[in-house]
Amino acid sequence: MTRRRLLRAAEKLFVTHGFDAVSVDRIVAAAAVTKGAFYHHFADKLGIFREVFESIDREMGEIVRARALTADTPLGMVQLGARTCFELCTRPRYGRMVYVVAPAALGWAAWHETDTAIARQIVVEGLQNAVDRRELAPASLSALATLLLGAILQAAITIATSPRPKRVAAELAAETDRLLLALAAQAGYRPRELDPES
Image (cartoon, rainbow, N blue to C red):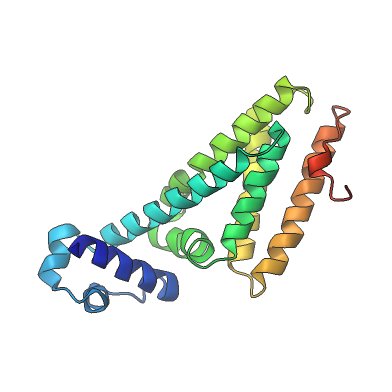
C-alpha cells in the first residue's frame, strides 16, 4: 500500500516536473508518508524513478505489441506498431516520461537499452515475416531494423517535445506509411493497408 502510494505520487511528479525538479521530500509529501517509509522501499530518488519509468515503458510496449499483432500482414505489423507508438507519445505519461524525462535522468545508454528492446522485437519480427512472405526484398534485416528503429525513435522524441503533438504524430505516421510502401515496392508488393490513398 505504502509502496503503491509512493509510486503513484512519484509518477505524477516526474511526468509533470521532470527528474531534477523532484526531491524525495516532495515525493513523500505528495504520498503523505514519512521519509523513513520511503527509504524502506527505495534506496534513493533514482531508484523510485527507475521503477516508475520501467513500469510505464513496459506498459507502453505491451500496448504497442498488442495493437501491432492485430495487423493482417507483417508490414502492417510494423506500421501499426509505429502508429501506436506515435499516438501514445502525444500523451505526457508516455511521450514526456519515456522520451524526455527518462533519457535525462538515466543517461542515453541506459535508457536506450531499456526502451528499445520491445520495439526492436516488433520491427525485426515484422521485417523477417515480410521477407518470408515476399512483401520485402531480401536484405540485411539487422541493418534495416536499425534504420527503421532510429527513424521511429527520433519521430517519438519529436512528437513528445512538440507543442502540437497530435498534428506532428499524424504527419510522421503518414510518412512512415510512405517509407514502408517504398520498401515494399522494391519487391513488387503494394499492401493496401499501408496505402494512404486507399
